[in-house]
Length: 444
Figure 1 (tube, rainbow, N blue to C red):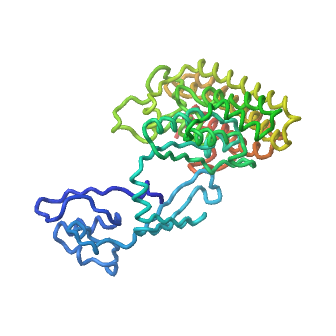
Figure 2 (cartoon, one colour):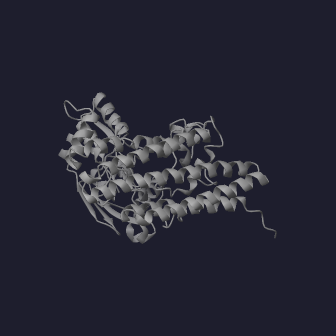
Figure 3 (cartoon, one colour):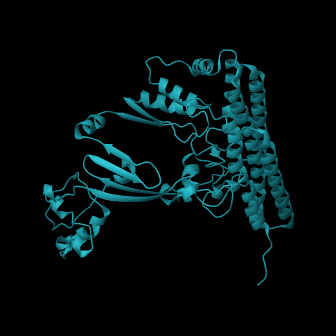
């Protein structure tokens, strides 16, 4: 129920015979008003319709004639959102809202209600400024909600710097509240995002390397800081080589997005490795469907699987080295910090392995979909078995790790959770889809 969703412009070009004043009209209207407005334009009975007639809409023509009292005092809205991670309601997140000129009350039926007041004088001050928009987050719904080393602030810092260079007088930085680690957002590995992006707005911002050292010294102590800085900087390798290929993220909302790895949608990550060098989406923007927007925007091209696997192995090596660095300063860390940090890197290693076996299976699945040969079917069965083995390995490994980290990666990769956008999508679920793809047709 935020303004970017509900403040939708309505543009109307009336018949030439209609007498009204052209120009913008600033008032509260509803989509319910369209029907009576069309009736009014046609000369029918819209002006006489009332709620007593069973319809709540009203004609907008009086507004076009400058009748100030013809507008609404309030509009009512509803929104049936589906939210990731809301298991109790199967993802359903209904919102009801009443909106007046100065006030907005949003009733979240399964969560906290929200009341907003934006007085006219405040709004004038806000709109008179130049605003730069830069969005960053700790990781929110993606990459396991703070349970992996995703402290790679450089892209977010660059966004803020660009906004400032272009004359922005205010930059909005969204720091996602969905970070679910026990340490919370300002104490875990991703706190550097907020610190670095905020300092860009200072008159003389310090280099990121200085920020890293300063924050880690204050957070973990001078003795542990050098090893931690070296380890956590490897987040770049984890994100760009372990979880991405060809500018495309290979996981979406904890691995839950089934469309990314299985047939049936416009853009599929499973086809990424079967078309090396080809543009994944090559069409005019006005012909795109929603799943094609992201790869179209970055001009994403198919990737040679062997190149991805080489980078994936390097990312895993980096995570193992980071884990060794955390181990080397265990005596200088609080036990809770050590358990959390070591689990982050252990999670990352297993996550990289899971994405790697899925990518290999995805290529075979895509090839089999094109040419249903016995050879491809056998290769696909072998690849699915490897995915099952990896899922078993993850569960066995995490019996001894930090409880929160175990739960997160178990839900994300193995798939023992029902996601908001469909059934569980983990290694075993994707393997099931591939086996279904390879199953021989049944007679009758």
